[in-house]
Length: 182
Image (cartoon, rainbow, N blue to C red; front, side):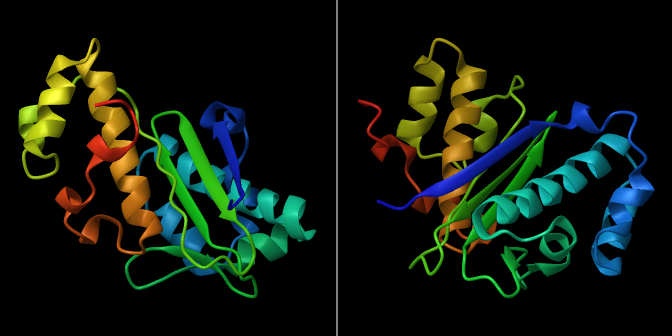
């Protein structure tokens, strides 16, 4: 069984922290990209996800924070990877949360994590994302908004693990096969 270290934190922990010293720890291109976000919460989410990743590399491989942050790269499709490290990684951020996953060294496949803010959404607006049976299960759920987000995060994490993310057809990932009894 593959082991994955999952780290998650509420962006509120960065409230009151100056962004500049945190961004100074990152390579200039990453820091510039993060500075391009207009909303402070967007910047904090992106900063925190990378800090979690660097912290996790410290736990698993004894990397210092600056080395871990400097090693984060993104492939052509946006998938994060860590230079000089054979561990698959994944990051996500939404709402108040940032999360990262770090897999076993030399793992044969990728990993995927996703976090989303639960909000009212209509399953019918996601016809191109969910199968008919998934839409029906969402409508039948006690809390349809929560069920839609649950299924969406499963779908996105699986697609991230496959290496394509949302560039692939989300219908190819059927959440009805998650062993949830449906």
